[in-house]
Image (cartoon, rainbow, N blue to C red; front, side, top):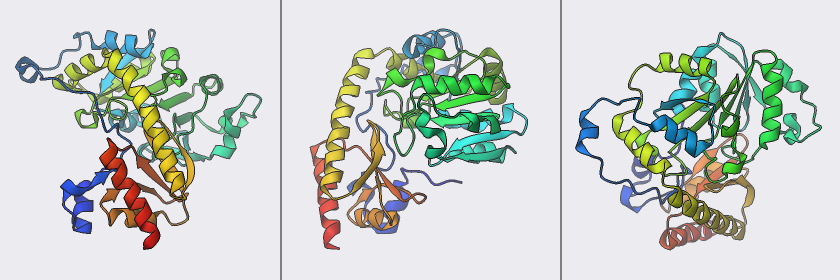
Length: 338
């Protein structure tokens, strides 16, 4: 099992600090999530129904008018299932990046080809794309987690076309895309060999509901449905998804607020003498030689962050309010006295 953020019970036990006193900045989840309404009793009592209108709502929200929709219990379910839809092949995985992708493809018998940022030339027009010819599948995380780097849609579509000429796939994980929807590939979803993953966990702050969607061509979508089986997304999750995706006013307000919060966090980290390595509207990442030392210094003051060892980085999520920001600021200042 790979380590993830949000291990608050473990942190509380290790440091002997009650769970209620912690500021958890380790997940990159919107700390002010969409306000979930009461769920009707009937939704809990009936089996999920695929003709509840959710697919149409997803297409309207995402702009993926030509894609097949596969609602899933979070992106993780798709990350684990997609590798089983192809015979063992060569799969490009960005490094650094969300490690569950490489773990799942490797576990399914595929050969992993690490793709470093310098190898792609930043994806700019005129770059040499021959590195793609060693791959059958390219998984890309856009924005990247943990660096926040974004590859323009035009570049990703160029990569997709080169892969598709040989029957290859481009799988794009857009878990952090909702704050910057202009960079999404959803508008192109439905093209052969293009797979886009979205979820409610990060931007909407609903990680606990375990709800997301895969947008793909019909062949891949049908294979994924068979791999996942019936009733893969619960009735309450489908209900919440229908409501939240149509709340466009909340989405607009959240984007504005998150951009302000990210700016505040960047300024705070820089003022603390830390070197920014990148970020998104939902997190900021610093580069540091000894990330565990910084993480431990903050944990001693009940602030939980996410450590990445190679390369050495620490990712900070957003504070929910001024009180939490002050707690982070004090923990950052205190570490200089250690």
